[in-house]
Image (cartoon, rainbow, N blue to C red; front, side, top):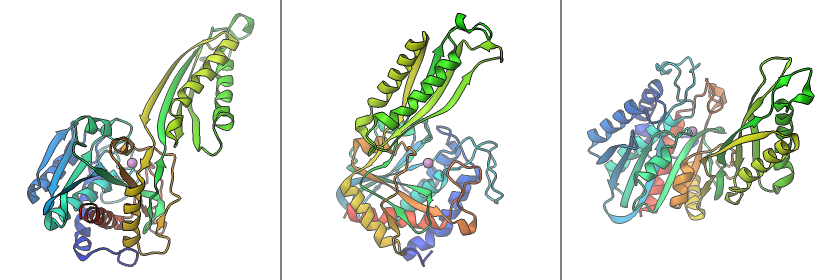
Length: 391
Ligand code: NI
């Protein structure tokens, strides 16, 4: 949209193709590590244009390499390709035809943007060095980034950038900041082992329901009383299962939760403190427990220099006043974090909500959809980053 952003004519001209590709990906969504049709389409386009690329990295991943006009620095740009197990409720011509699978997090848009970047950079070769385009599978908690990194996609890469189309920001804005952008995402499961019995004879039992309710209450004091109030963090218990009948004292109780925080120094604190609480409460009641803690992704931490580069580019692309917003942190997680642990880089949010067009539902909602006008903006931002980083 020319009124709210500055796109060069060649990228404006790409917009209809970006929309076409995005809708194709949207209509044929695939879950993590099963992105065969998506990867095939990407590979066919790259082949058609004559761009060298490797397929089947970490099952369905692709890395395309575009050399500039002369040697120089190596910049990677990453997009994720997977969809979610959600039944789409949008009544649109490009609605998902794969039952129970939906692009409800805009990864279809990310893939289309990266294809657009490939096309533009290959046509123009207006940079020095090399650009590596990483089409990553399985971002949604399935380990796609780790698999790609283990396969060696960051070899020789000096810096990396990536974006998320973001319905928490309006179309025409970019969210970027130095330091923590998104939270660490971790989860835990706990099973309380009590001693079941007759509902009328509690003195013969260790009531797992009583133990687990105490556990939950004390777990809620961790953020409230053990973490520095200036360090944002969350402990959420999302699942609780116990009991079989109203007159039977439960033998066991199971609870599961998620933990979020920005400061990497809190990494060991949460699993230790959570287990301490569980162990202490169990001991008090004479119960025992099983405990399992999983790390899904660390916090997304942007490098100061790369964030400044992206911020200046975003300021030059976005036209509306205050189009670049620094207060854009979120407690959602992203496996882009793993690349950023290895090489300096920057992840940004590209505003894609447009409530006037009914495009404002949150990510992972069955009616999620975004304003496709943002696609061209994404290409313009990435291309300008390449032109500056690989000058
Ligand atoms: Ni996502």
